[in-house]
Length: 377
Image (tube, rainbow, N blue to C red):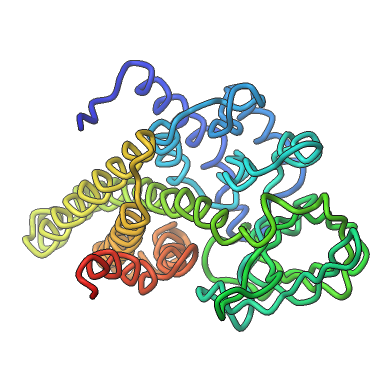
């Protein structure tokens, strides 16, 4: 594997970096203070990203997407990850689970590329097979009952990709996926509790009460939703890894600049070993996280990426970001905790990366299970 970027890839990185710095950074403080991305700003960001060809780059060209592979998409995600999540997610990278659309679903759901995947439940969390939301077959329809929470951006989406239990096999629940419009009777959505991480990027709660949907809403095959989710989770974990790297690189740049200019005891604090070694550790961890993520993305393009590859990238990069932001705050000292600077925001935002799309514990379980499975008798 050789990760030297081609001229086209370097141009992609530079284009996205300029877009992030010019179109997203200026709005970060406002989003942080209001916990909102105004609708007109969201429209503006989407329009500008479309004009640059940055919208839906991970979808096939024949469907109107950018047709980028996993590695090139990872390069773009790294740069977008430097900005506030609420803003950078306006540059849509539709969920790969939508590639399961068939027939009229392609025109009705895939092409509009509006995101919103409902998997997590209050009592299920990472244990997907214990979900209680159930879709019961009733003639040519399905009737859905249950609830979901932590559903990102559901407040601005047109439809939701719902994962629900539809049966049982071998003592385990079988899962199916559905495309459900938010104006469907029996479906209620509401903003969830405020989160300390990623202000402006909202999570919602969904309540299904005898919500009836036609069989044509089924995404993929009946009782095969777990396999479909598995394909989607690999790409989302890779996304968490690469955005963590991008945000960590921005934090390192800010901490390095501070260490080079902030003086104590007659010299720049970066000259003190206690500070210089922190910067060295931050740089090393981010380089390692990036290489691990790049390797997983490269393998994905070769159809070789395993669950373990994605889990290792997500685990290491998210935990590296936590250490990087914590060290950066220490370097900034008391000023790091003040909202005058964005360091405290980076520190808060980093915390959720070890939880969503599978906790660090789940990633370690995936990795260790893969190691032990060949030795089981």
